Image 1 (tube, helix red, strand yellow):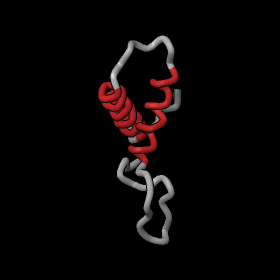
Image 2 (tube, one colour):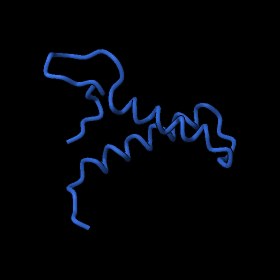
Image 3 (cartoon, helix red, strand yellow):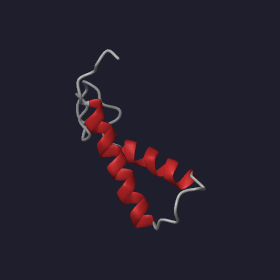
Image 4 (tube, one colour):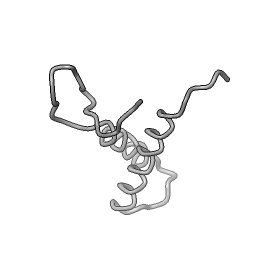
Length: 69
């Protein structure tokens, strides 16, 4: 199970500072959106909105049972 609120550097040693998985996934999505020269001209708020949507979609997909395709 992937919890978006878990730290990306989660360990058994206790709470961690830094980015959550959700924040990290959103940052990676934002990087991809900004690097796409063919994307519509979104403003910063739109880019952030879509990046979080992509992050949430990835977390949802990761939590689905795997299938043997």
